[in-house]
Length: 257
Image (cartoon, rainbow, N blue to C red; front, side):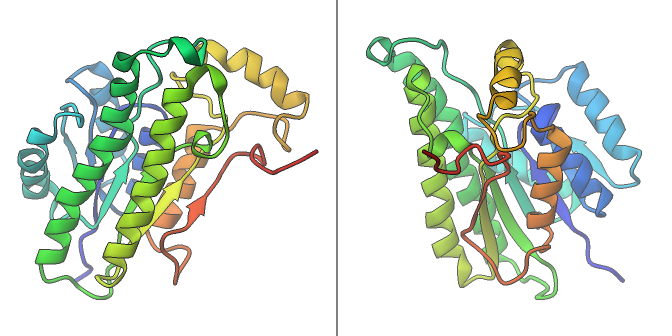
């Protein structure tokens, strides 16, 4: 009897998170979907995942509320089985863009609370469970964190967002070090310019900049493309690796002069 694979993907009612959930479902993973509150989007996402023939559970709650993590994971595992993969995708942008000297503590705390703090403690909660239980050595266990190319490239008008993504990148590294000896693989996916709701307001500007050479390939990426990257990493498609940064950014971060 084949082992059950189960993935919890945060921020997965749309965008990159949904792309990852669909890709993993296509690989046979049962899926837990998440967004901040119950809405039509997560219902539609659940229907799309269920059509791929796997179990799906909706887990609407704010990952920023770390007091909810354990109860949420308890319910998820009761519905779809012990988690073999966590995808930390939930993320938010700065409350407003503007002069770095005008950035507010509220905006800083907003991005840090979800992009870094929530990622750290949800990884901790899931990793504790993985480590504590007896695991089939042939089943690949993984945590895939979605940070951003902004972890290593500066956007002056949203400095707090860049700082939160740099923190997320380091969280991936420290968990990779701690969990390597447990045979749990950790990766940091740093997408570039992707067509999502978060980028919708500036997408036209970035499309033109991509055509002008901001990216080496002159276009924006899609959630499905990033989902495929996440699914490949989460399922062991790149063996004998952990702690790696994978940057699907069309070459945006390649140093040039």
